[in-house]
Length: 167
Image 1 (tube, rainbow, N blue to C red):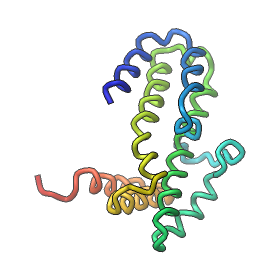
Image 2: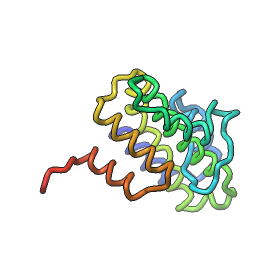
Image 3: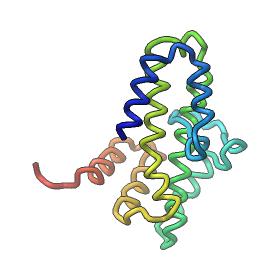
């Protein structure tokens, strides 16, 4: 994680050329190529680039928890990759002047950092080795987000992250 943090800081401080950061994004491994952002009211299809789109994911989430663990992992993986791919698309569609601003550089670096932090989760989802309780919580989070019940999704996330222990 320290390597990702150092890259994030270096990217913010030294990213004077947005095209350089775009080249670095293109050179990332296969895990990052299938990723993009959450835009609640936008349901553009990204199917031709990634093989799945929002309506497909909404239909898939309805059929989870039927005993097929590999399918459940794939649905969660598809959702998070779809979100990261949309985010990436939004970042690349910005004007050059906006990309050059400090805020633009921070947003691009944040996306890169998030992609790096998501890799271990993606590996566990792909290999079907994610713990059952975490998978169940992620299914609940994705289901709530797709229903736009963000408060309940946050509750499921916090329960997964810190549990219900009284502090």
